[in-house]
Length: 385
Ligand SMILES: Cc1ncc(COP(=O)(O)O)c(C=O)c1O
Image 1 (tube, rainbow, N blue to C red):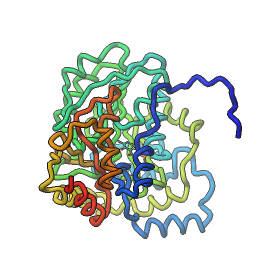
Image 2 (cartoon, rainbow, N blue to C red):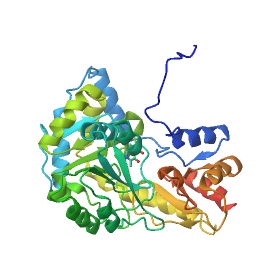
Image 3 (tube, rainbow, N blue to C red):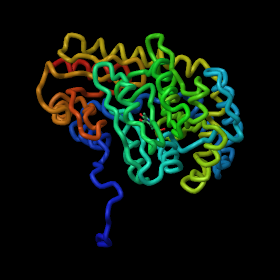
Image 4 (cartoon, rainbow, N blue to C red):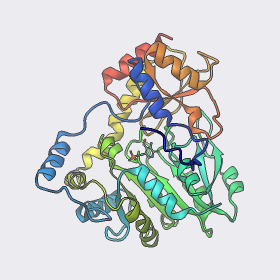
């Protein structure tokens, strides 16, 4: 096919191709173990596949209702009340979406107008900035630094202006594995109270928390919850990232506005998957055991690199282990990540890509949502450095 040759002024100038596709392609080319992209290399529960298949065979193959099937929304409401003590009306305050990324994009498109300022904490999941920019918003950055990635709330306070429209928080945090604390929520509450600021709380790793730490969902805090969109993802909780299904919790007025945009951006999400998740959502053991399940994997990965010169960064949640390599190499993190993929056979993500100005702290991110065998093999290879 020939190029169209129509004039194209990019709406995202300067935004590069996603590093995840770049590193995954490089891993494939060099037959390397892919600890770069964040997805499990093991299968999901067989009963979930059986339920999905059953519902397809039963004919649940047409559009779901716009906000999602009611039984699933009712179960989410019960789960949220039981886990976090927050009441969301399944009819008016819970919406099923085509994954968390699509939910995030839609929330930002719903709220952000030209020149609205959005505070984000970097390193940041890579969809936030493009979603803000495409809506002509202005991202304002707060940098978190290794090894603790703690939020400097004084810095946040100084960034708040009359134009601040949104703050995006992500806990447990990708890529650092940090879990924000009750004190963080108290500080956030002080900043937003009596201001016209909306919070987008990305909680896709809500069940993947380690070392006895509690996930501080925004919805535990009524003053925060009343101005928040909370985003979760079934893909992360049920090892089904390819099904792209998630949901949004938000008060009635915010949900109403969100659905206005969602109904034209997407309208509804994968029907048989909604029925399948509704069948197993009451199984508490699954999600309450997820922290222990992934903590074991983190520990296997850490054990398998013991004796190497990598310095592990504190990781209490999500499924990423960051490693400081400054005792091994002075090279930039992107170069080293490429080199490790080609020469050692392990792909990772350079954390500089999660900072808009590519801050390089000599830290690589490794995804440990992999089988024990994969993690041990990768560890052996990394130890050989
Ligand atoms: C912090 C964060 N938010 C959102 C997502 C996207 O979730 P989904 O696959 O449901 O779109 C990811 C996936 O890696 C993530 O790490």
